[in-house]
Image (cartoon, rainbow, N blue to C red; front, top):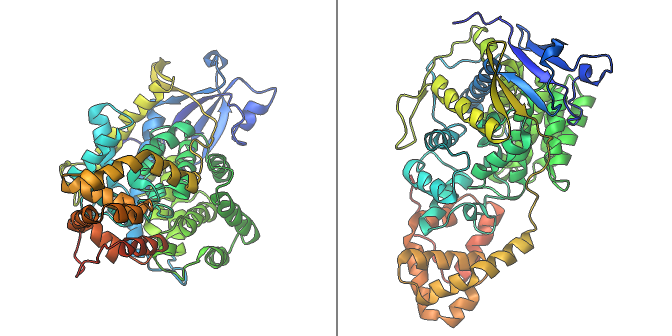
Length: 525
C-alpha cells in the first residue's frame, strides 16, 4: 500500500459564488488566479498558492487530479458501506430514547456485503458501466428489478417492485397516488449516495442522475432529499466545511420544501446546544415524531433527514464521531450513518481511512442480488463508480488532461439548485386520470390478459375511477378484480402492509369496490 500520509493535490481555479463556497484566497484581490487544495494527514485540507502558469481560462471550471478523484470516490463509497453495515445493529433500536454508544471503531473484518443501502445502487452502477449509459431507461430499470432485485427489499421499494408485476414502469411505480409509501419513504436518501459520487462539483447533474434512480419508488418530499444529499456529496469534493456543504444542499431544495425547515431547526438547535446532542435529539423527536413512533415515523424522511444533518454537525468532520452520532440518534440508523459516512468519506479520502488501522477486508459479498457477480470487492465496486464519474465529467463539458505529466480532470462546476420541484398532488392526480383514463376504461371493458385486467383494476381504484367503472361494467369489473386478486404479492402489500396512513386509505377504497382481503398473510420473497 502507498504511504497514506502522502499529500494529495487538487488544483482549483477561482470558483464562482457557490452558496458561500468560494475559497477565501480566490476572493482576495491579491491572491493568485489558482489555488491548490492539499490533503493533510488528518484528512482535512489546507490551501496554498499554485503556480500562475496553470491559470485556467474559465473560472467556472476546476482541475481535479485523477489521484484525488479516485481517493475521494473510494473514500465516499467505503464511508457509505461502513455507515450502513456498522449501523445495522442500531437500526430501529432507538425510537423513544436515543442510543448510548460511547465508543466506536469503524471496521469491516469480514468485508462488506450486499444490503439495500448499497446493493440497489450496485445493480445500477454495474449495468450503467457495462452498457455505457448514465441514465437507464424506465424499461431497462424494470427489467433489472425483475431480473435482479426480488428479495431483501422493503417498504416503498417492495411496493414498487410488485407494481411492476402489473406492467407498471418507473416513474409510475413511484407516484404517490399508486404507491402509498412514496410520500415519506427514505429511499430518496439511502439510494442516492453513489450517484452523488458520480458528479464531483456538479450538484445539479448529481441530483438528476440520482432522481433517475430514486424515482423508481419515491415522490414528493423524498425526491427533495435525493437532491439535498446528492448535492452535499458532490460539494464535499470541493470543501471540508460541513456548514458550506449543508448550505449547498439547502440550495438544491424546492423553496416550499419542508426539509428546509427541518435542516434549519437542526442547525439552530446545534448552535444552541453545541455540546449536547441529546437535547437536539429530544427536540427533533418532539417536533417531527408525529405517529407515535410507528412505521410512518421510523421510515420517514423527517426524523432521518434531521438525524443525518445532526450527525454531520455534531461529528465536526470526525468520521467515527459522525457515525456514532448517527447510530445514537436512532430510527433508521444505518441509513443516516451511510449518508453521513459518504460525505465525510469523500472529505477524508480512502488513503486517510486506510491509514487509521481499521480492519477493512476488501470484499463485497453478494448475498441478495440475482444475476450479479459473486466476486465483487469494495475496490472493484469503487472502480466502476470512478469509470462512470469520468464519463459524467466529459459528458458535462469537462475533459481529461495531462498537466505536468499527471492526469487531471477539468470539471465544469455547477451552482447548486433545485432540479425537480414539488408536484401539485391534485394536478398530478388529474393529469394521470386524463392521460390514463381511456386506457384504464378500455382495459376493464375489453382487456384480455390477466395483467391488463389487474393493472386496470388497480389503477381505477387508486385514481378514484373504480365506482364509475363498476357501475358501468359490473361483470367485467368482477373479472378485473379476480385478475387483481391473482397478483398475490400486490394483494399482500395492500392488505398486510403496515398501517401507514395512505395504505389504510387505499385498503378502504379497494374494499369499497369489492376487492377482498386475502385469507392469510404470506411472505412475498
